[in-house]
Image (tube, rainbow, N blue to C red; front, top):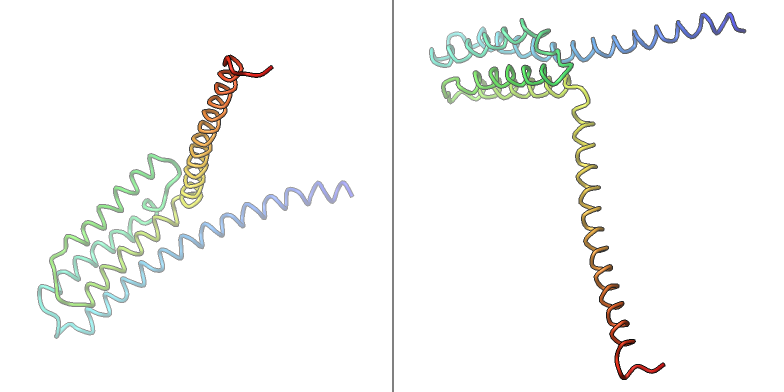
Length: 183
């Protein structure tokens, strides 16, 4: 029995370790797949509409494709967030990529607008996916705010009750010291 436990416990820890690694790889592949799928859609759009698209729209789409390629190329750097400093760097890079897409010249082509919105949405999704415990921190901050508010309201009510008690106590003292008080 003891021999079985000696082998079982380390194997269990190893399984949990690899389970965590698989979840990490799944998150990585899920976001990277969305970037690559968007790139495939843009390339397909350029190929299918090569004769119909204007030069301006072509340049905008190529620029978007270059930004997307750069994001995919630096994806492993982009997804590493382990502390607040890396989070600031990631937010800066995300902002730069999103601003590059938003600074592209305006076009009336609806497909290009859709590609730009998809890129921004995938960047946002990647940010929330690779920022550890962001939702938990947000929920915890909301709970703390709620508790502080409730405590403040409770303290205000308590102060009113204490003031009322003090007023009642003073009235009793005045009545005892009154010449009309009956003993």
